[in-house]
Every structure is written in C-alpha cells, then in structure tokens.
Image 1 (spheres, helix red, strand yellow):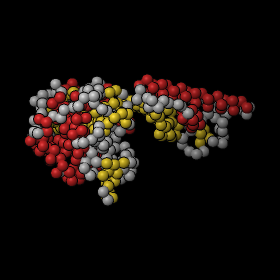
Image 2 (cartoon, rainbow, N blue to C red):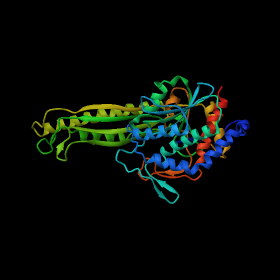
Image 3 (tube, rainbow, N blue to C red):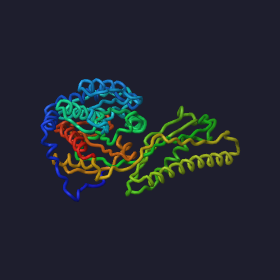
Image 4 (cartoon, rainbow, N blue to C red):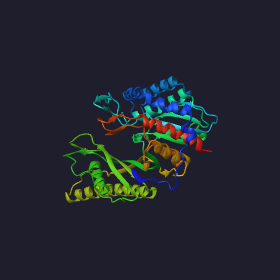
Length: 418
C-alpha cells in the first residue's frame, strides 16, 4: 500500500565512479541482452509446483541454478532455504532473496500459457519473477566479476505466503548460522521498480474454533450449535469499525466445520486476517476479535438454554467451548529513509528515470526491519496482475530494468555502508 511519494530535501549525487566502472556496465548489459533467456527461466521455475511447506522440488531447481551460475558454498539450511554466496572482501553481508512458495495448493495446474504479450499462470509474477530476477543479478555479478566489499548471500527462501508466516526468513535472520553477519536485506517481490517497501505492515491471523456436543438436526433441535455461534461471531466482528488512518483492515477469509447437513456440528471455525499500520491499533483489533468471540459463544449458550426452558423439556446436555488460536504474527517497523539501503534504492530507481515511492507492505523484509536491520522489498520488473489467482498474468517487456535496479541498489549500498 502506498503511503507517500518520497522527496529528498537534498539531491542525491549519482555515484559516477560506480556507473563508469567497466565491470558494472558489463553486468548491466548482460542482464538486458539475456532478457529472453531469463524470462524462459522464470517460466520453467513457475511451472514447478511449490505450495507453502512443500517447496522441495523448486528448491532443488534453485540449487542447480546456483551451481550453474558459480555461486560458492551452496547449501540448503535446516528450514529448507537455498543459500549461495558471492564472497566479498568482508564477511559482513547483504542478503538478496526471493521466495520459493506460492499460495496454490498441491494439484494446481501451474502450466504457463502464452496469450499475446502475456504469460498466464499461477505464481508467474509472485514470486516467479523475483526468483528469475535474483538469478539474473547473481549471474551478472559472476560473469562481470564485480569486486565488492560486503559479501552477498543469495537466498531462495521458503514459507513466505499465508500460514508460512515468513518462517524461512525468520529462521535465516534469527537462528541461521549467518544471522550475526547480516547487515542488510533485499527481498525481490512484486513487479514495479518504482515501488520501494521500507515499512513493515504488522498483521495477525487467528483461527477461532467453537466446539459442542453435536447431535441430530431433528431429534436434538435446539441444542447449542458451534456453527450458529460462529455465525454470531462473524456478524458481530463484521460490524467492527476500524480507522482509515492509520489504515487498519480485517478479513474473515475461511469458514468451516460440521459433518452433515442434518447434523448439529461438533465443531466450527473461522480464520481471520488482521492488519494495521499501527501496532497499537492491531492490538485493539485483536482484543475486539477475542471479545466478540467470547460474546458470540455466550450468546448461543444463553439462547439455547432459554429455548430449552421455553419448550419445557431437556434439549441436551453440554455447552459450547471457545478455542482461539493465533496462527501467525508479522511485526511492523521501518527502515529509515536516511539509511544507506533506502538511499541506495532511491538512487538506483532515479537512475532509471523513475519517481520512487516509499510504501508499507507485508513481505519477507518484515523480519529484518523488525530486528532493526536495514531491509527493503523491491520489484523484479515487468507488469502483471491478478496475483494469488489462477489467472495471474505477467508481461515481461522491459523487465530487465527491475533486475538492473536491484543490482545497482546492492552495489550502491556496498559503497555507502561503512
């Protein structure tokens, strides 16, 4: 989500020394001249199924690509992230990452179709483009033999989407064996090169489960019903008012439960996504959800008890119980606009004639940002739409500029970071 067009009070001076280096020019030219091959690689990777928690086949493909490119010390860590190094003169490190997983379940047809200028297929942009752009950057650096101070750790990470809860990057940054060497982090996710995500959007996701005794829809009519209680909770929560500034949102994305149309459910549930630009507002919304969940269950228990009394007979024993479970948490934060990484990102975008826009979003960069390390998410280039839909589409015209911009960001940061 865009929140402001960032204007510098002073002009950032282009690093002419960097731009005039023959090896940098060679790398930039290589990315453009190998555009078609890179798009073909994007198609190939997108056609390998990679549901969250089941990214293994695509990870194997990335290991092969890292080896082909010539990255060093390639490994798959305990969380199944794929790691490959371009070593610098220092062990201090910047990460360039793209996520392996997609939102699509096992069995989804991920074949990419060509429709005119468009490529159509689940995950072709998110994050097929990110993976392809990362490979282009790594190979360009290798082929041009660019000498750098900081080491670059290229990462194809798992578990970015949905209930994956950023587990791949959380492991990398909090538990992985290189965590103390990492100073900065770039996630390649999304397409628009003018979009620079330097603020982390906080979110929490819950599964609200209600359980009861169950029974026959005729013989036990009037007995407490988990599905009815979930309906009460949904109606109450749907009426919740949230602020537009700071923007705060919620969505009941999934509901389920029951065993048969003619059976009172033993269990029913709903899954809720809540997001906010403000940690305080997110906390308020979380407490509101838990309060209405308790109220909905209590209301159903009271109503059925009253129903049984009015009917002058025993409807059945038992009351409903509530089980709210926090599924995922993504913390917020911000990489300052005057940090070397944001300054480098803005400079690189402006080099290509773009007006950079600083944004807030929920991406893998949430993790380093919350850890007070420099983190941004940058677009991989090209245009597209219908992300997370079966008809997701991507147009690759000019997409090389996204990879070039990320490369310049890395190199500019390497110069700026002391």
